[in-house]
Image 1 (cartoon, rainbow, N blue to C red):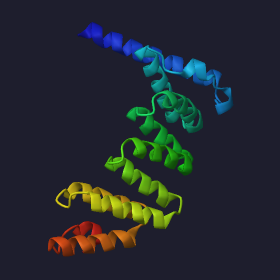
Image 2: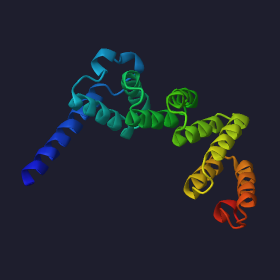
Image 3: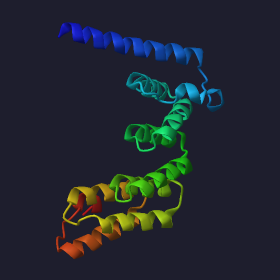
Length: 193
């Protein structure tokens, strides 16, 4: 067991060291300096893991532009890879590239139209871009598609509305849900009463 731990630790150190050395050699990694043939995932799972780890290291260093450039290359060949999608979304949101994030989520919704996470993320991105009417319609669509008895999901959607300054719609939705269910204390914390 000790031998396995040492091996894993040495591989981790090697991976981080090579990522650090590459980052030092290329401190201002830009989209123009990326050789896409070099970065495309191959049959090697190790190379893929190294690319993902390197992207994470760039993100940890605050180089979201460099990380997003690498992740976009991986995403082009693996458009349904949830890890790549999540990392790329983090980069886009950190860089406030909401239009790019919206395009990516639209593509995911075309592939997975019933995915609640993508639906909510799409509404959030619309709200962040100031597309309030579209965001309201999307949130409404998501709320109506969720089983009312699944309180956890409904609560997550309401919290997303509130976090994205859609307070009035959240309050209206809570009042409607209270009326529909007959439970006057439903979502009391989110409603503030």
